[in-house]
Length: 125
Image (cartoon, rainbow, N blue to C red; front, side):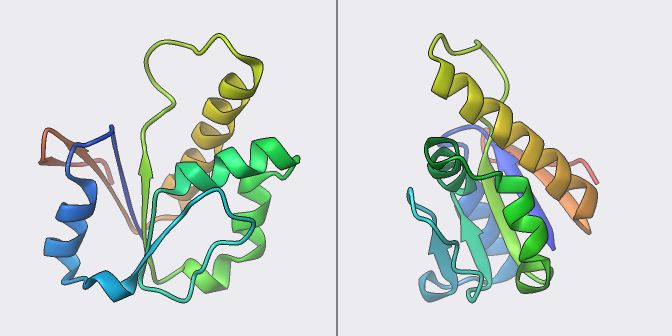
């Protein structure tokens, strides 16, 4: 699995499309959905799934652990919401924390980890 992180509007998806030759039909875009469609080559906006998890009492990291065989050959992309100013609201703090924990797990499991900042690639692993 290749894992890509970065802030909002930094070019993560465009980078993934170019690097991995992804077409739109190969990309699953997470919304606040119960299940992630790991049947596509790329899963984008993982932070939206973690928001759903916070609102519904689901541990996102456990969910990904349970579905590991389904994503182990994927490109996973998550927005970096776990840095910067700590949100005031309890749910938003829980969302930030859960996203950070999931990203730490995915980074450990990943073959490569890339941060995209201002459209530039920064190899972390």
